[in-house]
Amino acid sequence: MSPLPPTPLFWAERGAVLVSCALSCVGSVLLLCSQALWPELRTRPRQLLLYLSVSDLLSALSYSYGVLRDFQRSSWDCVLQGALSTFANTSSFFWTMAIALYLYLSIVRGSPTGSGLLWGFHVVSWGVPLAITVAAVALRKIGYDASNVSVGWCWVNLDAEDRLLWMLLTGKVWEMLAYVTLPVLYILIRKHINRAGIGNTFQGGANCILFVLCTRVVRARLLSLLCCGHCATLGSPGSWQQPQPHKDKDKDKDVPSPEQNKPLLSST
Image 1 (cartoon, rainbow, N blue to C red):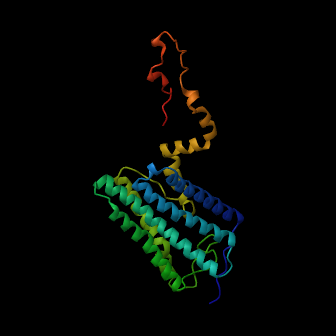
Image 2: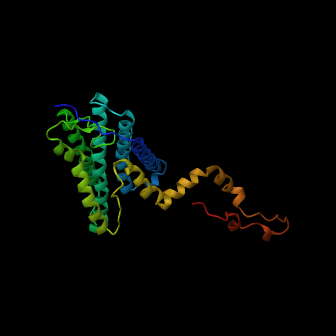
């Protein structure tokens, strides 16, 4: 069978994908840093979000490599990039559904959500994508697709006769399942996350907007880090305390009370 003619890609398309991947990487890194810097924010939902951020980061990095590499044929790095993007992208859909299911069980059903459920999420969200990816690589289903179903990266080899089946198994069936399941679950718990149209390359950025920029506590702490030098000067103990009255050697009434020594603004 002769190789498929490649689909021509414009630089504008490549640039849009690279910008989207870069924003996704930045968003995923911000989510990971917020978890590492502030242990008090490590609730169970955010713990699940941590694993989702890892998947999104790997997915964005693999897509970026594929676009920059501009594959012209199947090669070892083409297969590696396709396998990594398949695993990370499929895992990302599983962790997204795991978060929605966790919120549904804990808020709507009031069911106990202990460590057993978390281990179940790990087995499914890491194990199933890994098994699918290993099977696809072993059966030589991952390879050069001539950019006919991608934007420069490698995915399912279009020379395979059962390519449609492997396209479903390596991403599309889980993507469609997520798009059907997520609105239902979030409507049931009276929350709505509109993920339609975001695409595979901007998942980390979307999660950052939802769980960092739109979360008051995390947003305030990020702003405090950005202006740490200015805030440190303003927040020094001497600059926020009331001026102490002059002590009178003969009068005890001028001795400042403990209330007078408290800063005007409480630290948060």
